Amino acid sequence: MRNVNYKLSFLIVLIVSLVSSGLLFAGQSPKQDSATKQPAAATSDNAKTEAATAAVNQMIDKIIAKENALGQAMRNMHPLVETYVQSLDKDDELAFHPTGDRYFLGKLDFNPEAITQRSLLNGQSLPMSFLSRLKQVYSVKYLPEGFEQMLVVGGGFERNNYAFEYVRREFLGTVRTLVFDVQPKKDDSGTFKGRIWVEDQDYNIVRFNGTYGPSSWTKMYFHFDSWREFVGMGQWLPAYVYTEESDMKYLVGRRHLRFKGQTRLWGYNVGKSTAQDELTALIVESDQVKDNVDESQGMSPVHALRAWERQAEDNVIQRLEKAAVLAPDGEVNKVLETVINNLEVTNNLDITPEVRARVLLTSPLESFTIGHTIVLSKGLIDVLPDEASLAMVLAHELAHISLGHRLDTKYAFNDRMLFEDPEAFQRVYLKRDSKEEADADTKAAEFLKNSPYKDKLANAGLFLKAVDQRAQVLNHLLLPHIGNAMVKGNQMQRMADLKQGAPELEMKKVDQISALPLGGRVRVDPWSAKAEMLKAKPVALLSAREKMPFEVTPVYLYLTRQTNNAPQTASTEQQQQQQPAAAAPQAAGVKQ
Image 1 (cartoon, rainbow, N blue to C red):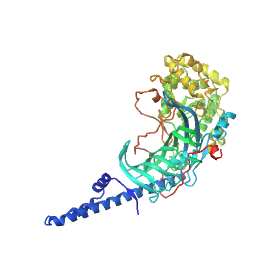
Image 2: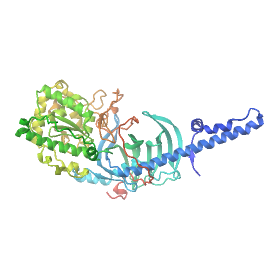
Image 3: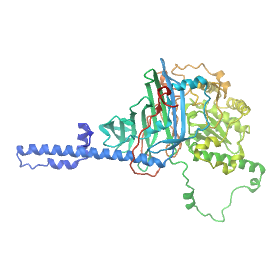
Image 4: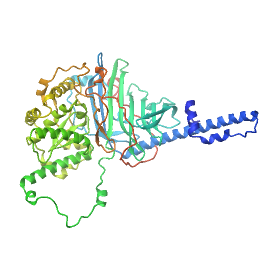
């Protein structure tokens, strides 16, 4: 028997809006006496109830079919998936503060039987002391595949395994959703328990919130809030997962796990070649068309050198963009280039070829140059508190370019770009030596003294002090993928002289904003990997706990169906057994 629970209010809505045929049973002849009318009314009510129940059952069948089809469709999609976790401890003034972090980045291979990722971080790790290794024995080991299981409901998501109870209608952004509470009929390992939000056109789950479980001595399941975004063609794909535990006990209750984390996905459609489509659309031009290059300049050795260097630069950019770690040219680049132009104009710089900007789509804080292209990570752009702080970072990279610190032209040979996406950070080397870094700091200081930002550099120095304050506990956030590390020995090395002119760092002072939370400035389109500036309005802070410098924050998306993306869809059913998001400590019998 189909087990579906629903509230009386929902039945009334369905009766009125979905089951118009039930009204036929109420159309009695006015010649009938009252004795005849009473059983007819009862018959009508029963018919309406049965019709409403059937409508609910059909709706739930569609929800289940859509969810299972999504899991199957994702077999052929390999987006990048990034998980960043911050461990927390209690703080009387700030509620919680970070005490450590973990980071995972890979290319997703979604298989309903075993979700895995091909890591982009091979060979990239932090040195670990003997004491740190000893502590790890009694700590929780986070499993990236466990966080990725939170992308789909899974757990044998079928009608005979779960009970559904309608809650209400609710708008998430501009998308109207139906909200259901979902519980497993049997409390088996890896089953979902929580709430789902279903868009009311095609019955796709666009958000689900709860946990898998139950946890055991060897497996720990976390609470999470999983969101999807519309990418076109009626398809909603996983985009964000927020995870949090404020007081999870382990080691027989002797330890408490407190953390918050965020998983992001992007680049579902990046790297798929469109060259064949472009070939079929070639336009043959007239023989009368001539190149506008000045032949006298085209043969210049200087122009040839610059063209060769630009080719190396473009090769690296295009390859990183194809791997979905670098955003395509877009609006965020224009914001960065405006600040770069301010620095160039006020310092009378005439740099050829022109200086460009791009966004690295990962969270760790870093900046570097690829030839004449300045690259800032999404995470760094997010946390910079103001334009003067942004100018400080850009001035350092602009100084590298003006001083002639060039890209190795070995990348002009295209065979060096023929590697697998997960090898991107190992095959492209862009670090500078210590002398080049010091020279760039000196030149950048000169640029800033002549710039429109010269009277606002105290804020930039305050940002550097904030990095110092968190450097010891947020190691992975400050570990770069490609560029130079900004921190050495838990102290900010880059542009460190600016700290001398900065005010005292006061974390408990509400109106002193030294750094912003992660995710506050840049949005990444999950389908195309385009970077866009968020349009959120500024909010007055009520307490110091809302400052959250460098911290992971909850996700609450403004959903919409407006998009230019056009993905291919698939429709087959699948079942999935969930994996835990963490393994219990080694002391509890789990191999580390």
